[in-house]
Image 1 (cartoon, rainbow, N blue to C red):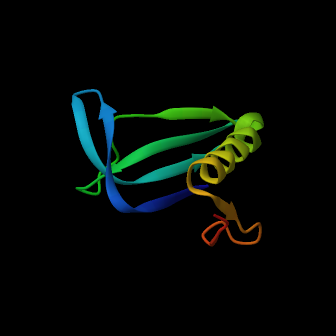
Image 2: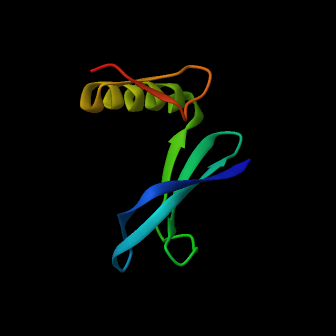
Image 3: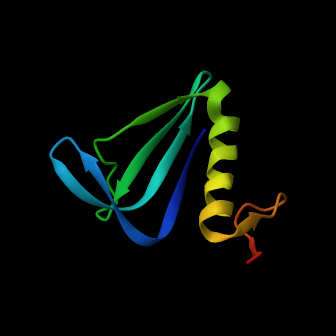
Length: 88
């Protein structure tokens, strides 16, 4: 399974040949891992790769939720991860 996430603003990633602009990420799942690759502003996949073992994905999700809650005071709606409710 492969899916893309496009950001609301341009970010950066460090690739093989330096710093590049990114407008999103590609998530690719196989039977053992989830891979995260940047999407450049030229709609190309950047030369950068993070591989996360499937068994660690729930922990990653929990830590991302915690980062949102601690940093921005958001609680993620459990039925739709795109909707946020401000708590502070």
